Image 1 (tube, helix red, strand yellow):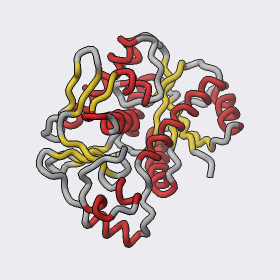
Image 2 (cartoon, rainbow, N blue to C red):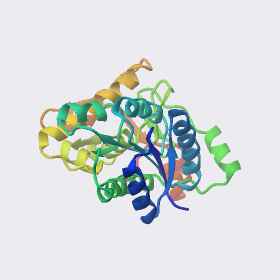
Image 3 (cartoon, rainbow, N blue to C red):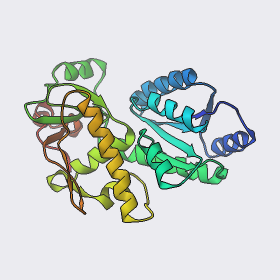
Image 4 (spheres, rainbow, N blue to C red):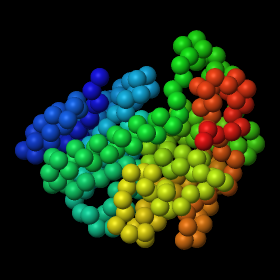
Length: 277
């Protein structure tokens, strides 16, 4: 099955045909979304398919900036959907405003088809690599239902990454859908000693190559601030601390639920008290 690309643009300009031809040539199936309702429907269907076959859905936001921002808010709550936005300006203020919306990657508005394809390849590779971190369950439907029914709530002070790390469960039991950038950030923290990682590790694991260290810190700061606000909306406080001029640390208890089940360890599956290496 070819990976699906949802191309959101209100008016299919001449460069849309060139982009489509390049994407098809590189093995993508392009679906044109002329309005937000179509984009929402296609993204939800794609997310459901991705939950079954593991193939990520990619969305390109190529409309005018205000429409792209509205579209990004629609896609932000959907797991397994990677979002690339075309931006009119590459200055810091414009990029910060774009990244605050939960965009995973960006490219200039009038970039060549080759640049667009490469940016999309990078995003797809990043989504696939992080999906591999949490192996998909091999159990059948009935077994999966039993596992879900027996899945315990988060213990006091315990935060859990669930649904292949696309969902963050708070100690209160409330759950929050993560964007791919937020998911990658949390997994990088989890996979490092003491749940701490440098700015460089966190930024590079997102597939980005910053122009300088200051830009990396700024963009990570935007991501963390956005994630904190989302958690605060659920009346909780995210225990992520900034380590001055170094990186970030998750100071609460954090586990990856269900990953051990794929290794065949029944004890680990019943009690997720250890994250995989």
